Image (cartoon, rainbow, N blue to C red):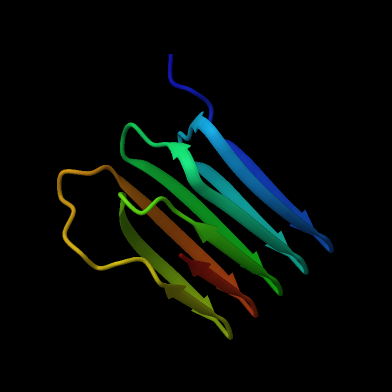
Amino acid sequence: MEKEINKYSAVFSGQELKLEDEEFNGGVITAVFGGVDLDLCRTVITKDVEIKARCFFGGIDIILPEDINVEVTSFALFGGVTNKKSKKNKSDKNTVTVRIVTMFGGVDIK
């Protein structure tokens, strides 16, 4: 049985989440007139996973483990997306795919 993905949201508010020592299977992050900080540095990623990030008039920060590959696809309207992860080739590691839609907001991947 496939494990359920995590869902995080902030509407006119903020959330700071730090997941530790648990398996991460992907997730959906929504920020509307608010912000979500999701720290996954100490999670266990045993397979390729996907994060869907939706940001409207707010901000999302996603902090990923150092030893992970990252792929980003995005659509930004009056907003921006920044991928600060290392561009080193780590082909033997799992990949986190981040799919982003942002309007009047921003998403940072660190």
